Image 1 (spheres, rainbow, N blue to C red):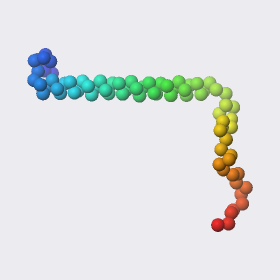
Image 2 (cartoon, rainbow, N blue to C red):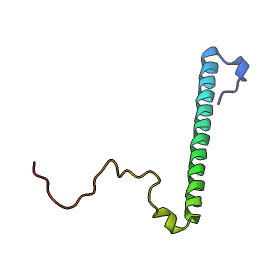
Image 3 (spheres, helix red, strand yellow):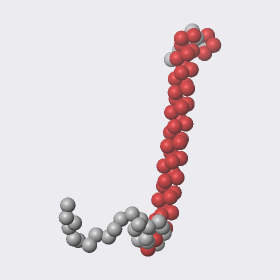
Image 4 (cartoon, one colour):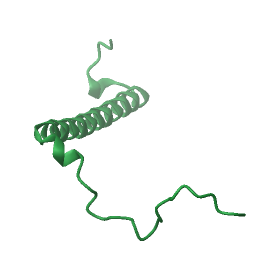
Length: 78
């Protein structure tokens, strides 16, 4: 490493070390953000494992039956 303290460095060296520090700081914050999202998703997944299986088989709360028609197996002529 450099034996000189930061205030005795040249401007170029100081700017390089400052930029590296800023990039590492940003990478640290990004890592914390990604870890927080992962933990949140993990908690939600853990809660979903505690729910009864019937809750996963329930009908959707907003049925889309008005958008689609049930298929009766007949082929429509083109």
